[in-house]
Image (tube, rainbow, N blue to C red; front, side, top):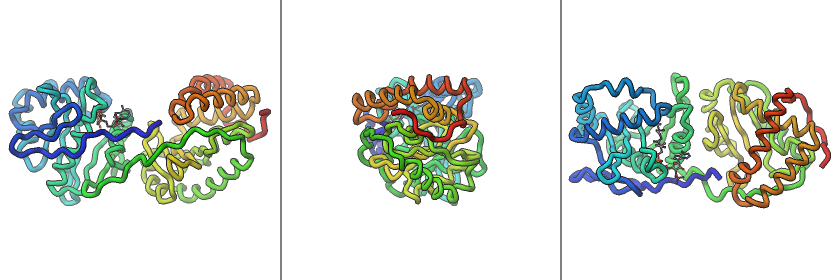
Length: 376
Ligand SMILES: CC(C)(COP(=O)(O)OP(=O)(O)OC[C@H]1O[C@@H](n2cnc3c(N)ncnc32)[C@H](O)[C@@H]1OP(=O)(O)O)[C@@H](O)C(=O)NCCC(=O)NCCS
């Protein structure tokens, strides 16, 4: 299941005398001082080499900077009311980095940037501890919000920030290939993934499912009209007459622009939809909650391959009763093996879905079928 548990970083505060923070599970967090410039340089260059997709700056550019520039940067991050830098250490080895910089004092906005954790200590709470230290600094400095930019190729960072209480918000002006994440640091954020995930429960096909889709489509279309790029589609197993399914109606809504459609997130939340950055390059929602699902809703651009793929798979099952029976068998077996783990259940069906979709796309079946009742 997604339900990624929160890191255990806590809220480390920097001790003024020692410069050391409370321990993360593996690393210690330390606010950068001028003397830390070699560690700052080594960590930043390691980050740019390891994760070029995550940053806008390039290794080749920064590697050319003279040591005096690194020393000056470390000094500025250490003793400057405008910014702060934090290094995570595993023993005496620097293994992580984060900087925070005042972006807009008038509006109480601090920007987090350059977050990186060495691959061998990832998923151990290091980034969580760095972000908590930075948020502590920002809060003490009087900030109301912290923001972070995440490149589109970096789904892990989207999930990470969301779990730390950040919300995806539109950037003004919009920037290509980058999303903006914001958190009010004066409030305790709500738990992002509440309660238990719903179990995998398959039921016989219900002829009322298309009407449920239609009702929800009518409710959502006027609300989403500013962002919609055409009609919503009923996809997934409940869109295939006669096919057993989890009783959750999957809705796919085309949007002109995914970044602009960030504005739809709070609108849908007000209608009882729960948002999670569950998949890259789309906005994913379920309603009313992950533990009690009636609808899944995804907003995505039609140019995304996922748009055509979901239609192709639906239409291939609507048109081919033998395929639909095979799929039903596979679902039964996957649900028997993974009754409480939705992600493993989905993975168990993945290669069938992939190959049936590829074949349907080759044959060009997408968008050609209306619902009908295949043999059970
Ligand atoms: C993103 C990054 C900073 C996370 O660092 P980390 O120390 O592994 O993060 P944490 O251990 O504090 O993770 C906290 C939670 O975030 C989520 N998370 C972190 N990495 C994830 C990933 N690759 N996929 C999905 N969820 C992830 C998990 O839920 C994790 O909790 P869990 O391990 O208990 O499931 C790290 O992967 C990294 O440095 N990546 C390359 C550089 C980068 O992308 N920087 C961000 C620029 S915006």
